Image (cartoon, rainbow, N blue to C red; front, side, top):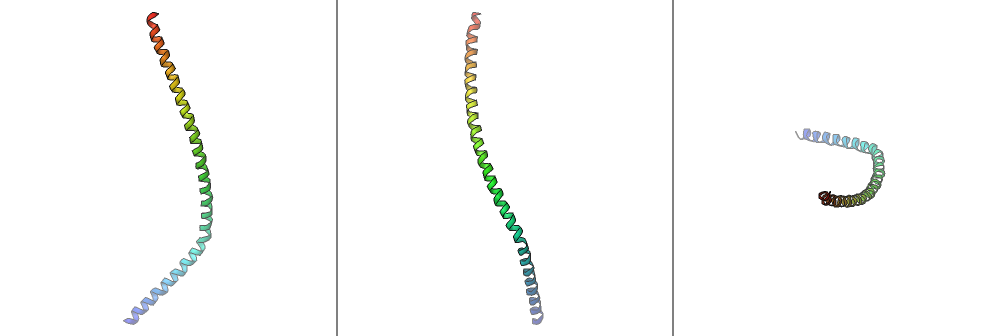
Length: 94
């Protein structure tokens, strides 16, 4: 009985060692591809950061322009309200 247990244990160890060797080969084969993908990812990340910076700058410009447009619209509305009030005051005289 002990021989069987030892034989089974030895078989498991041999199978495990074989699996480990196969995995090491697979990892060794995957490393160049992984390194390539890592390099591509770094380049893409740099580009994304540049694009993000450009978008932030454009957002600041657009936001400033929107503020100017809103102020002009408020001024135009104020002028229109004044003109309407003047017209309303002048209508009874007409």
